[in-house]
Length: 333
Ligand code: ADP
Ligand code: MG
Image (cartoon, rainbow, N blue to C red; front, side, top):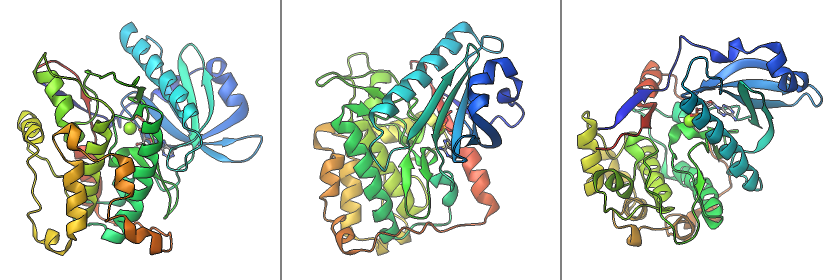
């Protein structure tokens, strides 16, 4: 089975425990501020670069072996170093979070990123609120642009989801969290399971179920973009079952519906694009590059480029965030 682990650790704050000596490099150059978010093994804080006065976000990763196994520490070290290396290759694109600086000590890694002051796109949405097609189009345009850019460089993200898309302002969003990203040499396939259950592509799940499965490639990102686009327009996810194994089965079959009333008011072009993204047959799935030329995207040329994300003050948003903010640990079926 697949084990789901909640990524919210309210009770621990590892980043408080590092010594001055260890953080000297980072601390000499930056002033740390409040916590912006947490990942499975990292804390992200706002920080100010002393020289410039500019604000950034620093991801502090505990790579010591005090509270975790040597293997786990090694995995985190490799994952973070890979994230930084990959982001350095993608520095030129406006839809991809910019890496600014990096420090390494024996116990902690400090990866300094461009600051996304408006936080996760996930928190700007909630189950009762949908985004208009016009807004969704402006958001998806930026995501298709960014994914096209990384795929052209043979880099796959593998964990695209609303929590990993950050808002710079009311117009600009960026793709972040490249911890699972990797380069796929042309013609090669991957087999390892990583991502988040509701966003997993059928071919990724198949690799876990069947030893003779073909593997997966860049197209897993387009599948996740289909889940994101559906969720933006519907206000709920396309694939859901309270039993995770059932959910994975539904995904493999590509069974989703444009069922509820709100879909009546959504254009055929939008549904067509979602259907082409949530295409189980990888060879028929639309690429990000093709998405940019899809007829649903065409009106964007005539629009003034502003995106307003509706702000919702509703407690259920926080609950929903907690509920869905899960990461996957891989275990073979
Ligand atoms: P992990 O790989 O552990 O999931 P992330 O890179 O996704 O870590 O960061 C965890 C959380 O920290 C994000 O979901 C977000 O809320 C916050 N965060 C990360 N980077 C930034 C940033 N550049 N600006 C603002 N908040 C950020
Ligand atoms: Mg994350």
